[in-house]
Image: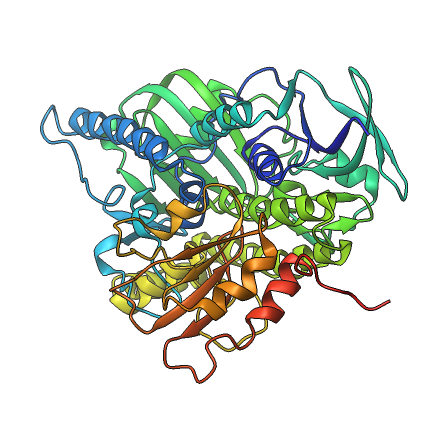
Length: 518
């Protein structure tokens, strides 16, 4: 084999997956047809799960710096709007945690003590980071880890067999054990592999752009619903979004022109703006589709290759990063012989349900954006709910994936959920001990019997004995490499080790020296 894995697509999802695979010891090549990061405007913010994933790999300082620069741009935008006065909100992102159908969700109305929120630690403060910045940071990390990123190289075909995949590219053939398609909503890998891709057809036309314009002082900052659609202005200078409900575009690949953008913005906003320059622009719709399975033999999918939906709420990037975190350590373990191939079955089982929930989430936003009387009545009800603590907490939990819980064995409330970022007695936090991409058994009770069970998993499961004054009820937590809790026990449990051996074997194979039947 030339490589253990070929990843088709070098966007944030492909690069994140490649980094996770390298942490697990796999030899990885990333094929990306573009020669540099695509400057076309895409997601302008990230949700907490994405920030959490990158934080757990030691990238929090870089994210914080990217957000600081974005906040500077936002403050410049607000000063421009206010005639040089003031700089806008600070604190958690922009004082909000996202939006539902353009209805902004205020950070101060979120009750983070509600079950399911957990504690994301400092990652909860990271919001305003663009997709291009994420891709740039992950590109640098991939270089540091020794990932072979081949820009300007496009996958043109492949042949898969029981032993591996022969990948044909514009630069020649590559033989690898596995192929993962992270090549976007129009995925070549998905089409050639024959994955079923059911879903709903598009009904709307949306444009997002960064422009120079005059007459913008009459545009409302943020999201605004009108009689003809919905539009957004900000949070950076010149950024606009238009949403129209007269059907999908006749030609989605047609160039987005200055004249077209200006006409649409005037029609939706009712403001007589003049666009003088288009810096970057893109067109999107609300089609929502998802493959029925994420793996066919030696070929797997992640990110938009596996699921597509509208861009409302910046959900796509977070969903794809979650796919990469879930798949990376599992595929690396299979490649290294640390786990059987059946471990990969849990990838579809865990991530397909999450993806289906996001598709419905984006469909519901379109329903609340339509300009017909029934939809506007629904929007008014949702707006009222978003003005309450209970409503904002629920919507924020859905937006940020706080309700995600994989169906794992065990009764503890933490099992199957993203692990809380516990603050330990030595001043460190849980995320500080996950940088290497290995599992972690956190022993909070100084229990030798716990550590003895993990002793046969050296190199697969790290063990840390520490105190956690803020959570005295916890005895131990077993955290998977993707940051999800595989097992946990309370200090008052009659048998604190109950279920730990099974959880270790379920996710990380048999311990060294164990005798297996047959």
